[in-house]
Figure (cartoon, rainbow, N blue to C red):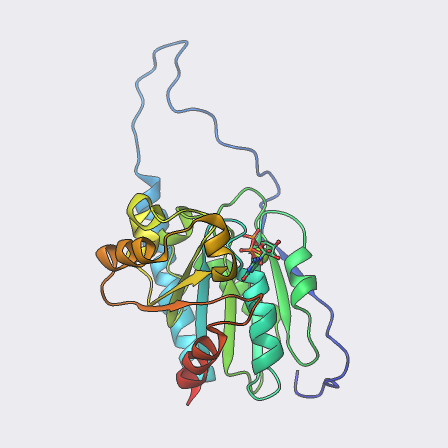
Length: 251
Ligand SMILES: Nc1nc2c(ncn2[C@@H]2O[C@H](COP(=O)(O)OP(=O)(O)OP(=O)(O)O)[C@@H](O)[C@H]2O)c(=O)[nH]1
Ligand SMILES: [Mg+2]
């Protein structure tokens, strides 16, 4: 991307990782004939395979000098809005790129288009998360010379993305004030696996009657070690701390 003029946003690249036949598999067992069924734990195999690819991604990131953040949250917690504001502030000083996953549409990728910022949309079809091989294919589609920070916006889902290592350096979990204070307790894996937890939309916390102290307490119960930042992409409150964290990652 270094030869691209920085005044026009580059085209969004769409990487469609759906299989030709993405129909769900038939239910296990032949209920009509009673044929015995051997159950194979495909989930474990799938995760093993993912871990191998995640390790390969990590090596690619290291070799290219890329620092990589995987943003995960429930749908609508504010990932894209935060990235828009982050790119506006950071892209002029640090070369950034984005991979964004969604079941359908390239809406988020369009919102994230910025001059000099390569963006690729990964369309997953039915998959409720990104996996390491999708990231590898997304990387192949992007030109990343001089890029220092790669943001991955995962599919909006508070459960599935927690199980899939993408090879990232930092996992960033967003919890928005509109979701309720109890989510860290109800969906622990995505919070325990986070390096950074962002409490987002704090501009509307008071109007919603959202109890920030309780939410922070719940976060700390589940993950005492994560960096916790309260912020609003709308009012800008807390953004400086987030940006300082990102600058620190590439310093
Ligand atoms: N009040 C307020 N609204 C916000 C803030 N950040 C995002 N929103 C709004 O929340 C809605 C969802 O924001 P997105 O950024 O699209 O959320 P997302 O996590 O990317 O959503 P998915 O990609 O669908 O998972 C939009 O209407 C945003 O304008 C914030 O800090 N404060
Ligand atoms: Mg989004």
